[in-house]
Length: 157
Image (tube, rainbow, N blue to C red):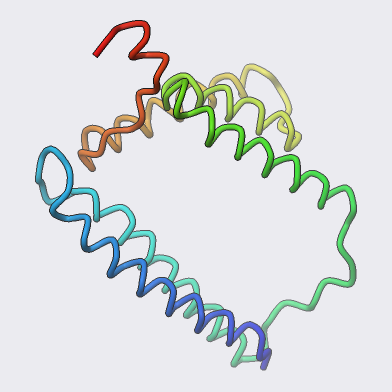
């Protein structure tokens, strides 16, 4: 039995329940009210997280917990830090460029930094994924994604 896995699982379940309840307050927000509203996606994610935490606790009780890592790989840690910086730059740039323009660049740069090979596949994923995400949020979840200040400058309000 690995006590740290059990404690982490319980804490994450508690946090997930809080997020689930908070997401339930999103139901009355948004332009169009449907079954799949703003609260649907976060609540699905929290249910999946609770399930994964349950599996973590179950495996810890069975003694199947993963061994503790001996050391932190310096190159992997540096790659993690660079990825976090790229994500923060993306987060800040979405306000100006909007989701549609910032996301393909973010995905391409992040895949390149993480070592994905072949620029045609990276370019394809960087273009197709934002279109799919936009469709899911706009058509299914009825949640608008950020358009960005640049779009307002070009096309007006």
